[in-house]
Every structure is written in structure tokens, then in C-alpha cells.
Image 1 (cartoon, rainbow, N blue to C red):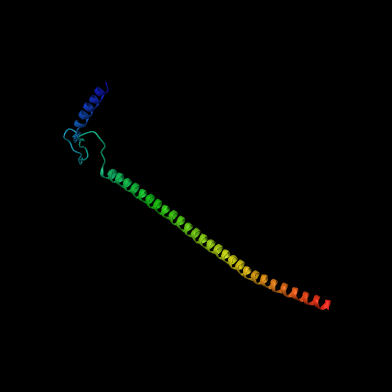
Image 2 (cartoon, rainbow, N blue to C red; image 1 turned 30 degrees about the vertical axis):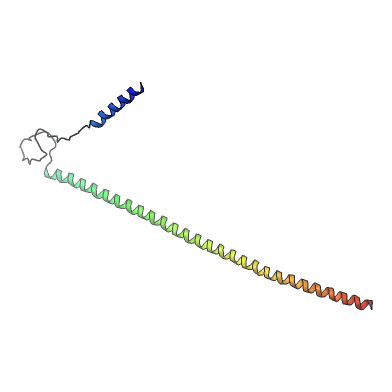
Length: 153
């Protein structure tokens, strides 16, 4: 049963891979006519149905289209300038934030270094205080011993 399904699948695969559909495009010809224009004089009959413009109307249509194109060009230029200004604003803002952050971290580092120097200086003095305390204590002990010996005599 399984072998039949496998054989049927292989045959179907071979048929599908061997059959390649071909598509061809054709030019559609409207009864052998091409797009063209015919200049009509007053009183002449039109050769076909459609819209007919005189020179003034045609120039109005062309002028309107050119005005629309000019308007779209202005809108496009305005949008481009707007995006550029937004980009420059964001860029300047990030530069200022970076400068402020850099100064803040430099100041924090300086404060930390000053505190380390202060603690290190205090440690040096505490060593001298300890030594001085031992020396004074030793001297006081000898002075009391000497005073006790003198009192005992």
C-alpha cells in the first residue's frame, strides 16, 4: 500500500516538473487603429465618438495638469524640507544630550576622584595619629613611672 502511494507520488512529481506552462503576451489592436488626433475645422463631422477639444480647451487642460504638477512639486519639496528639519532637530537634540551626559559623567568622576584623594589623605594622617598616640602614651607611661619612683624614694 505504501509502495503504491510512493510510486503515485513520484509519477505525479515527474509529470508536474516536466510540464511547464508558457504564457505569451499579445498586443491588443483596436481594429487596426492607433491612437491619433485629427484636426477638425468648423462644420466638419467627427470621424468617431469621443471627446473633442479646440486649441483653447486643450491648452487649459494642459495648463491645469502643469499647475497640478507644480503644486505636487511644491508639496514634495515642502515635505522633504520638513523631514530634513525634523532630522536636524533630532540630531542637534541628541548632540546636546550627549554633551550634557559627557560633562555630567566627567564631573561625577572628578567628585569621586576628589573623595578618594580626601580619604587617602585622611588615612595618611590617621597613621601619623596612631604613631603619635603610641609615642605619647609611651612617654606618659615612662613619666608616670619616673614620678612614682621619685615619690617612692
